[in-house]
Amino acid sequence: MFDIGRWQEIFQSIGKNKLRTFLGAFTVALGIFIFTVLFGMGNGLKNTFKSFFIDDATNTIFIRPGFTTKAYKGFKEGRKIQFKNDDIELLKKEFGNKLEYVSARIYKGVQAINKKESGSYTIRAVHPEHQFLENTIITQGKFIDKNDIKNKTRVVVIGRLVEQDLFKTENALGKFLELNEITYRVVGIFEDAGGDNEERLIYAPVTTIQLIHKNTDEIDQINLSYNRSIGISGARKLAGDISKVLKEKHYVARDDRSGIFVRSVFENFEQNMQFANVLQLIVLWIGIGTLFAGAIAIGNIMVFVVKERTKELGIRKALGATPSSIIGLILQESVFITAIAGYIGLLIAVFTLSRMGNSLEDYFITNPQVNTGTIIWATIILIFVGALAGYIPARRAARIKPVVALSDD
Image (tube, rainbow, N blue to C red; front, side, top):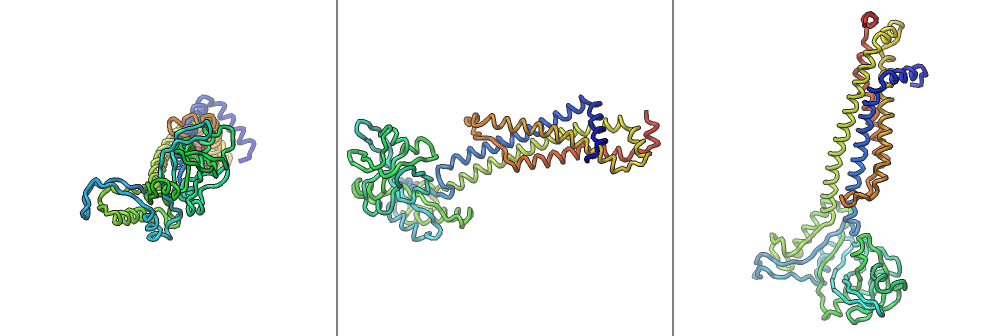
């Protein structure tokens, strides 16, 4: 491997076959370039799919009421289902050890006023656990807590953009905000990875909003997260069991798909990631196919090299060179050309991906990159391809008989 004489022979051989070597090396470089760029774009597609769910915990289940489409137990079709506080208590009782966080949601449109500034926003009335379901990031103050729920306090947690709209450069924490002519105290400011729409929401205690709006116990939606220890299969069963329990309570037929909706984030996430993985697998095979095309090109070069050096190889064998030493010489040259060309293609591909950045977000590709593991695998593939390209001509060279070689014209 570190024989200087052997390396001199390799470079002399490359010098004699410059055009063929360049074309073969170009094919390999192009193959590894295509492989790396497409693989990186596959990762970018995965990043985009992940960003769709960054706003919510991936073990979240959303439950919302709808309208029945079938008559059931004396109730007519077209009936509106209404959730109440006792639905949450029922779920906690039935599935307590399988649940992690549970929260109601109530939506109310409000006109918010702070001094001379005003705007229309949505109040999302929730329980304290909602912070963990929504991945809400508190930057100042606190989120809704149990005392706020118990005492039905008039407090709100506002999004970063609500503070920016209504308080300008002033710090909103501890200040008062008028919502539909009712005054609330701002106890927290939050940010949300979900984007601008999420950061223009206002959170309030669910009990406070229920008290203010006709002292009702009605809720619009139930959000919960399951204990991850039950796994994906357990989560699917849990979603089905929740649907069954709530349909029985609200007299909805089991096969009525519109009475109660149970949507699991993990199912959407899993489906999208499976789609991305399939695309990346297709990309992988395209890249490997291109690399093998490069291997064929390198193999053809080595065939010509062996043919042109037939006499030389015959003399070597006559002087005592072993078949393994001749095979090693041919394989070393093949792997060397493939590795150098491959790494040039790899470096150009990594540079190309870094320059892309987030310029392809409109095509659902976010931050396309390849990790260290991919580069290691690409290196292994390069070595394998180089060895494969040189093996057949190397074996042919090792079988050359000195008498035949010396008589070759």
